[in-house]
Length: 88
Image (cartoon, rainbow, N blue to C red; front, side, top):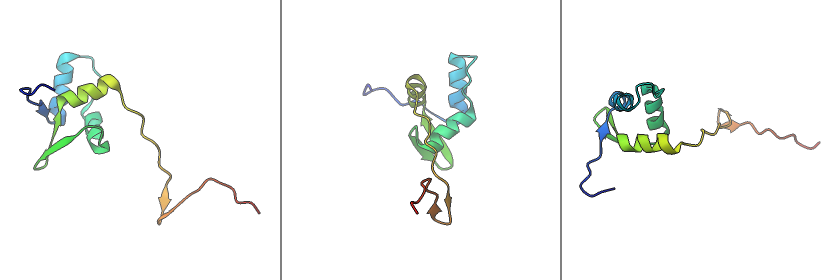
């Protein structure tokens, strides 16, 4: 990153607006951007209740792609299910 380059920090709606300006037929939605934030896939700077996201980080992630989330085993009361049969 260049030293004099200022990060392009945007809210989720403005990220989508910028992407739509570049690609009017994009399928990227506000919900998707918010899910990236929630999953920790892109760094966020919080300004009060407002999440500021670097537009370049989102564009890089879309360019490179991300691994699909791994499903966790459900936990009930602190006990998780193990799919293995016990020998008798």
